[in-house]
Image 1 (cartoon, rainbow, N blue to C red):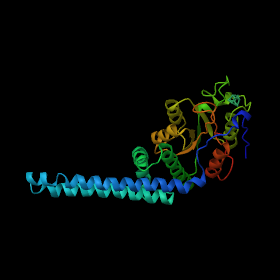
Image 2: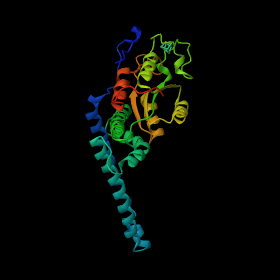
Image 3: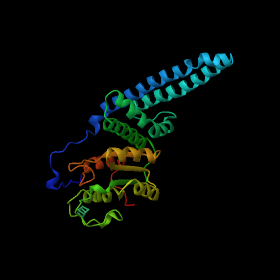
Image 4: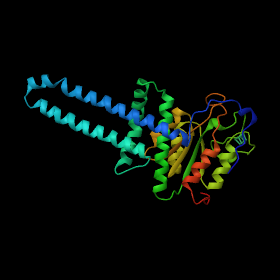
Length: 279
Ligand code: SF4
């Protein structure tokens, strides 16, 4: 395993987000609870949608309440059925019949709703985002294990990992890194060579999207802050993205860190046969 060389000034006390396998059970519970709560709120809204105009519609035509009832009932079956299926998928940690497409839609639409529902019951936005990424990661790994062998993997890193005093331009070509060891770019470069995967450093969401379009990977292992990671996962779905939160001992966007061993652990899982030829 590649050793991470942490610059001594970066070994300060830091408040790190909880991540990794230990968080999986709690994260699942948070997401499933929020999905169930949303289902409850949606049920109340649908009942009101039916009951409130019931009498007014009856005055227009005797058939309209029945039509409204059928439409509301169909909406309820589709919505609540989808939410129930998602709860099963999140609970199992793997896709079942028809669920992958549904999950893709849910990733785009459901997260903002879950953040709002979470706020109602006292969860911070970051807690929901962490839980969402953890649950997504589990599903992505299950998808990799059960799908075709991966041909290409992209390690997509934020520019703030680079030492802020470094003058080398790694965003254009990461191989420009002189491997001085002042930041984790050196370790990531070694990791990308060891596993024969593509490594790219992006300065923002637009560049990241461009890199994804250019490289067309089967899997992205992305490192970013809560906001960028969740929006990146939403933007690139249905492309599988395994997300890892960066660590920010100096505050946002300055000399951030990534646990390289966590990145390597993901690569070990998706390439159980070991090292691949370089791409
Ligand atoms: S490891 Fe590479 S990117 Fe980081 S400070 Fe050294 S030369 Fe710059």
